[in-house]
Length: 204
Image 1 (cartoon, one colour):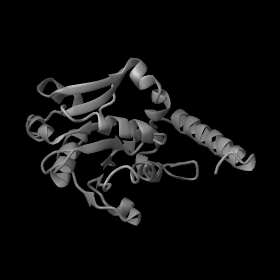
Image 2 (spheres, helix red, strand yellow; image 1 turned 120 degrees about the vertical axis):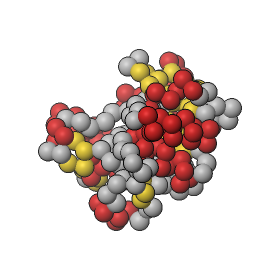
Image 3 (cartoon, rainbow, N blue to C red; image 1 turned 60 degrees about the vertical axis):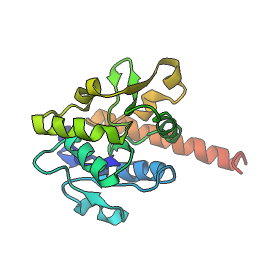
Image 4 (cartoon, rainbow, N blue to C red; image 1 turned 60 degrees about the horizontal axis):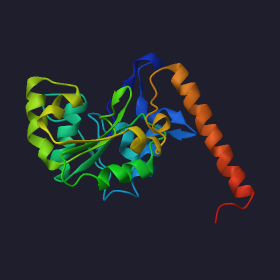
């Protein structure tokens, strides 16, 4: 599930998912990483128009609310099963980390990375047991996803366990012009490395 309602207010109020990094919109990079790993990809956005070209089901936030909490509730209700949640502004999300989070869900309600800066609730797995706590949080007007964690069995992925997945890169998001410039440089370096490997016959 991709939460795609965010706008970059410091980038001219542009839709974050449509900002181009590495020659294509960030949301395309997200979808291309997730699609091979999950049964289907759902986009949560109140305005489905900009994402129609992706050919994926797009649903609105839960009625009467907005923000990540309302988006999570909508996605859980639509999926009827555990959901891997990510934002649309993470151009370098890790496929291996996504798989690791999903594999660790049995026995837990939430599996979420935790960096020194705190939880990463927009790149986490939420099980069906989250529905009612999320619903209550929406009714209270809560917007922070971490506010529901005290009601749930939460599996933290942190420290050395998380370090092998390059968390600084995977959780890099775009909020400012400086972020966008850095993301484009990172994507260019990624492409140069890939081309170099192909040229030297290291792939295949």
